Amino acid sequence: MCLAGKIVGAQEALDWGLVSEVVEKERLQERAGELARDLVASAEVIGPTKKLLSPGEPVTYERHLENELESIAAMASSAGTQAKIARFAERTPA
Image (cartoon, rainbow, N blue to C red; front, top):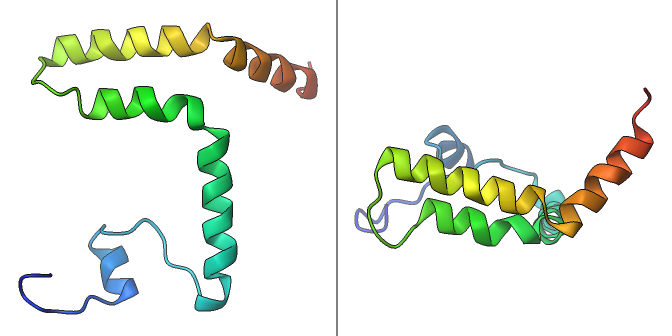
């Protein structure tokens, strides 16, 4: 819309898929803080996810799946992930 000079409203941007959610102006700061906390909590997966989404060179579908499997295996075996799984298991009723 930059080239057309058209201003896109919040609801229109949501309808077009340009944004994932719309919040009231009064809740904007609070919601931004929530999103920031979510990103910080998932920081260890952001890098590998970005690498999968933008590998730097074209890859075949099969190679992408292999890369994804390797990434999941590496993250699943990390100490941080193992600790999170253990904490989750402690809270979950048998």
